[in-house]
Amino acid sequence: MATFTPTTYNEAITGEEQHNLSLPHISMWRHYGGVIPTGYVVLITSGVANASPGSISPSIDDMAGADSGSGDGGLAIFSRGATYTVTAGEQTILETAGYSMD
Image (cartoon, rainbow, N blue to C red):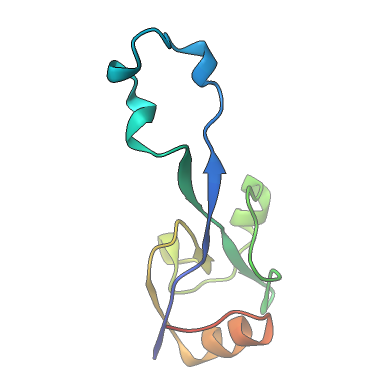
């Protein structure tokens, strides 16, 4: 068995202007350096993984249609930059779609 970690991307923090900028020392955003690491979601549906790097925001219907697997909730849903132990079959499917195993 192999391990798989979906990639992440940096989401720029927006909306800081809505916070009180005259008091930056109390803004929670100061801890994030202007970006928040955000994970892609990789789904395997009908034996096929969505293309690399994954989805940013899959629909509930997309996630409900995922195959059974070793991801979140016993389904083939891999998200958040978490590390999953995948089966040999899932590894083949993920590698075919352009993903790398850890």
